[in-house]
Length: 179
Image (cartoon, rainbow, N blue to C red):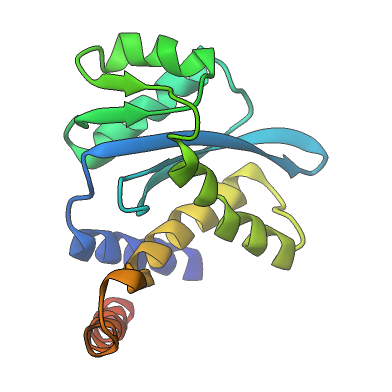
């Protein structure tokens, strides 16, 4: 029962968040779940906000296509630009699902997505690993939305604006969890 309430709250927060950016940075990282290697696919926008997360067993073209379809369904529109590393699966999925979108694979261009894995790794250590792929998917989907909600570009604003945004985020958070 608490799990269903958490998903509803995450959905409410996602609605309040609005539409994310139109440059998508995609990356995958492996996670061990009960001794088996799974892949955590993550998409972030140009501001570093998490768009979507998918946990899968494979890292092939079929898995990449599934991730791309999930992204398109969740966002409702195609991006202007797609930035990935040089994994061949991304190219294959890009040609099939989003052929009109510019695809960049330059070195160091995908660091935004690489850095976005750090909070997940930190949380994974605190939880002493994930217990199942489903549990990891549920937790990380909600965790990504909540991180977006409370993360601001601190270096671009003064302390007064930061405090105001932070207070507004907590007010919206309280409204979302009360629903």
